Length: 319
Image 1 (cartoon, rainbow, N blue to C red):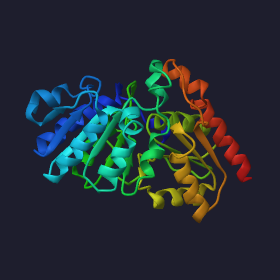
Image 2 (cartoon, rainbow, N blue to C red; image 1 turned 180 degrees about the vertical axis):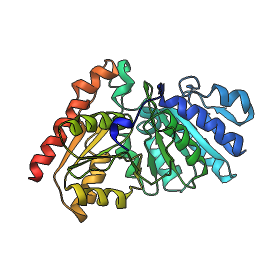
Image 3 (tube, rainbow, N blue to C red; image 1 turned 90 degrees about the horizontal axis):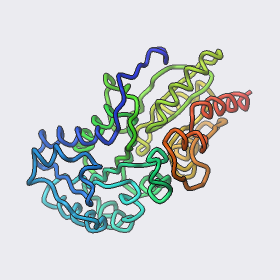
Image 4 (spheres, rainbow, N blue to C red; image 1 turned 30 degrees about the vertical axis):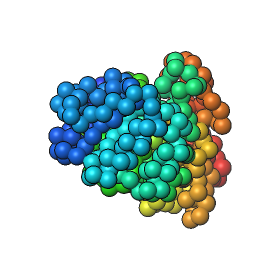
């Protein structure tokens, strides 16, 4: 399929994909439980509560306690989803996640909304840009970053069936929906195009931006491979290596610090197996600020033109 053939069927926030996905998961499995830290509306849990009031726990503004409660629930065979903003899901409760979930190997699903710069006007104190790194460094933790409403819904349902701790990251803004007819599997990359000049690996909201950048690059005569790395850990190493051995250069694009995120994972894999020129799109070791999602993506170098420029630079380095 040509990148130009990939069409959006409308816009919707990825957190709504989570809200709809957890309802579907709960309908299939009576062990699915939802917990929140005073953010049921923001986490789109209203329908879940309507259908399963006895399987919802309001923990209040006590995120650390919520993680502990969730860990305890797994002992009885429950599948708890903890829900709050990504900043509070990770930074505020890292000790509890490390000790009670990761180290103990508990089947807790950490559902984290409002991640990255596209949280927008709430500003730097809420725009966590280091959470992927925090979570992927924990032994045994699976890290999933879906790209649109449809994929977030599918990922939530898949996460409910997956055994082991999972960090599921999504966002607040309305975003194009373009993966409706594409299957989702944890740990398996999703390829949107095949090319020979450049590999673009992206996750989350920047997958759509990578597709738009790929279209512009194709119009310039480049052959572009765009791959959605929705599962940061475990990384689909086979798909990544197959792509870079063909194109011999790459760009990574993520709504996260370039330190510790998707780019680091791709860079380490390439360094060990097939060293190539790589350019990294992401925040450059900085905090964010208040602004609209569009303004912030542009200011911090995460926009479509930035991906295009990075691709052309990587290609030139390859030469």
